[in-house]
Image 1 (spheres, rainbow, N blue to C red):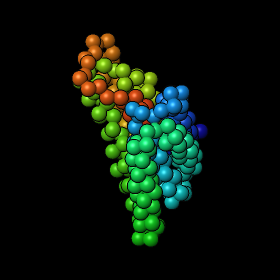
Image 2: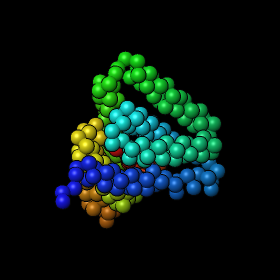
Image 3: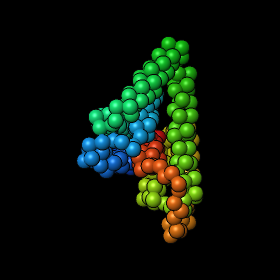
Image 4: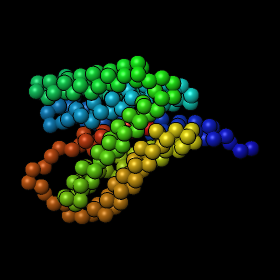
Length: 245
């Protein structure tokens, strides 16, 4: 007996949940290091603020959509919890200047930005139009998040070093994008499927770059920058997607 496409969508969504769960936990070593050193100096909060905002967007989208949205709610609810914990730890151990800038960013994006989007879609749109507007916001935001690894790929090419782009992370993020792509495609939800097409392409490019430069002699930059956390979570999303869908 042929398996219904909704059943396949559930299978891909379940696999996407499992992989996204592991991706959300990827920064744990970074925060253990912050906790152990009692300082977040040299690290950035932007990836975690962005990942939290992304999870908030997808939960809102899933709640408005209602149909076949349980798997979106489960993984992004976990994302909200874990990202909030990361940010709390970051705020505790961050230098005062960084802490203040992080609080400003949270207020700007996650409080006022999300609040403005929430109120405008609730009061100025209804029914399918509301879902369409929220879907487009999620789609555009996730495409911008998936484009974030470009800076890391540029660094790999410039330095001929794959230190900040481990193959295992690129591989799992690519598989994650594939799972959510088929989940969206089978449900004919192109707001989920389309961004993950880009995620898949960037994931393949990252793995190819890794294979090209893994044995290359690294070049030393005059002003090296600390990109562990950028690789650890913006790429997750990618997170990311992130990451999630």
